[in-house]
Length: 346
Length: 229
Image 1 (cartoon, rainbow over the protein chains, first blue to last red):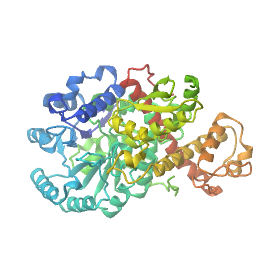
Image 2: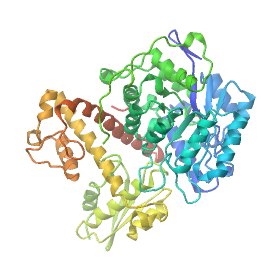
Image 3: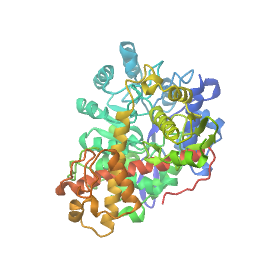
């Protein structure tokens, strides 16, 4: 729980990791390159006092995570989003089983999400059923750019992906977090394109599709699909840290998302340990859309911030929320409450 | 032999297709070495995992641009510090095309990808130009009826017209200014809505460019400025 200026915020961090990218676990140069890339994201966008040494960044402890999120970072519940990357790391980068260790120790502090990969076909389907059953999963994190042998990725519209979505619905795994990456099959297409989310969201109206990183670098696709598909949400991991170094850009991103998707479909996330939730939560609670763009975009009221920081994720995951942090009335952003122009995507 | 200045001038016309800015402005060109028979150009990108298709386009476009410089001879373009450096450098040097460079991983060349991003860049530039015209006192109705011949001769307008011509859209003086990426006029009643979505496209491209600059600066310890005015 975070309190500031008399306002209370229930905080759900919608995207956290406990990863091991240490040299001992790196399988090849790609594993080394992947964590170096993450570390540059971390160094580029964090305030200086929050920048870790590379060695700690490669592998941090359970205690680091507990302290940073819950003692310092105001987080009430964190959602583990596993990222396997078994072609890059010997034991995987961050698997469901690894996250489960902390979930079992602190069941009320975490939501444990699983994962599946359509390229595992029938065998993977059975493993996913067992995983969902074992951990009572309510969500999965999918990384469409994950390398697997010669494959550079997959799409939600692939035949086996649609079967896995069907299975997810049957198992009550209703929250589908989708993370786009720099590669895909075939490699000549735009790997960040969100186009496959559109038909998948239409085909499975009872599933929620949370687009991680709000589709960045394809914010325009995110906004476009968000107006068409009511079950598409935006996860703010990676967008959040711009609040410090590029506040005007952050304001524009959030402003666009509020305009096209609305206040009920955005989820706060730190992507820990990419960034520390403490400064993100503090700066977000204090944030106002900067002056010279404020008249074009919806303003972030405390109620809207409460929804983004925790209430929206709590709704998706049926988490109990204290009575004194609820929101009474909608603020009127988003396509359900305003008529949006029908504009063709370019 | 040619000169370093002539090569750099040619490279200024090579753009990052996604960010719609010259690779020279983005800091991607680190060295130009002019030799008797060949010109060697070194390139770098903001991350090790930048999308390989865009990386390939910049390397191939740089080669074509340099080889078109009189007296340049062969162009050796060397992309460094990227997960697919070797593959891309060898593929471009051997003129294998994208599908030949990534056998089994690609189903075709990158013309479709390039077109998608030229269209996005066009939409963003048209919105930026329209916004400055509105800020300058034009009404939405006047904007809807504006023709290319009535544009001011600003750098912004010229850059816009260049993108427009690349897409094969009529840029003659009597052509209407506001068109969709296929060249069809935007009807007056749709102008405001069309510009609203175009604004999102512009915010996206500008934000990506700013982020990529920051990542490059972090990766290579370049001087950088916090803030985004």
